[in-house]
Length: 312
Image 1: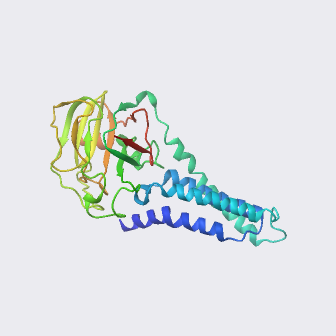
Image 2: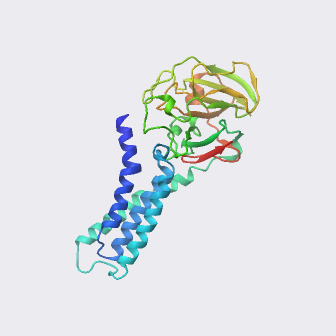
Image 3: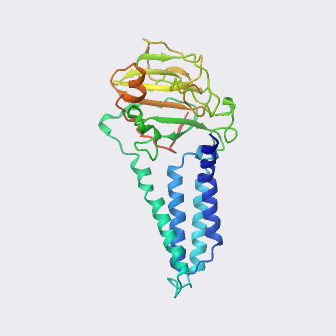
């Protein structure tokens, strides 16, 4: 887990600050040199803004600060470079930097379209649901229709799954970067409501919350509820032990209390997981892995990573 935290910090804080610092500091030898560095920095910031999986760690305000700094730096560099030659004159070394920046920028830029196409889904199959949480601003940590934005797509049943956290006034999901106390996560204990009216076909309760960073690999969904509605089986997972408020066979109405968010199952930290598969299924393997994933649309929105939902 330490390696994952280090990578997240480097990708969201270290590299953006490095690129921006060097943007201000570098003495460009030509306008082309300045253009290529602008291209590389802008491509990385665009990619990490939409595709970064850690903005709820550091605050969703941070990307806006980066972009403001980038625009300011680009304007300053444009002024500094206006009297430079368009390309290096009779020098080979500056061309190395120009080509390198062009290639690095292209590497970042080629991944940006996939952060956009993650919003594409088969509209005829989408389930129209109520958002299952209330009373705050919620952040989609993983969601979308491709692997760039949603690691769940590796499992067929979870092709359109969502992981949802809650944000505080500072735009972060917890008090601390990665606290071990589950109560320090904003979403922990939040009430979960039925996203549609239907029949409760599977219930699991009584599994303990995991320490953040640990996971229960035998009970992947942890405490969970499966509701059959609109010809699909909808799973809400990682619930708090003892909080499940329904039992198998119950008929629930949309908006009815189901339980509370916990940290049970194979989960890195408290969050709500939700996904749906076509048909009525109660066996664990079909629900978690082999079922046909169905897109979820909440109040007209197909949510992807870094989307936010504010509900009263």
